[in-house]
Length: 65
Image (cartoon, rainbow, N blue to C red):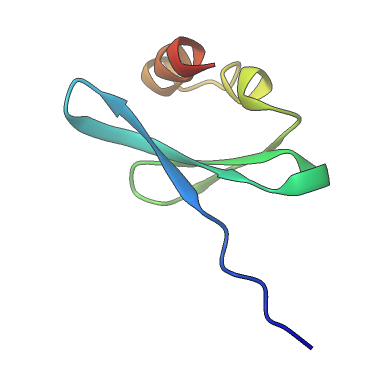
């Protein structure tokens, strides 16, 4: 049995500051984290994650989506 690589974390940046992360989770969608690494939840896609109640993270995710 082969091990799967750990999920790749995509940094969400505003200017040069990291304000959060996204992890692609296959059929489960996208998992979003704040800058401290605290999970914000699973979302259908990047656009759904952009609707979370974290204005700075939301605005930046919209720019990359």
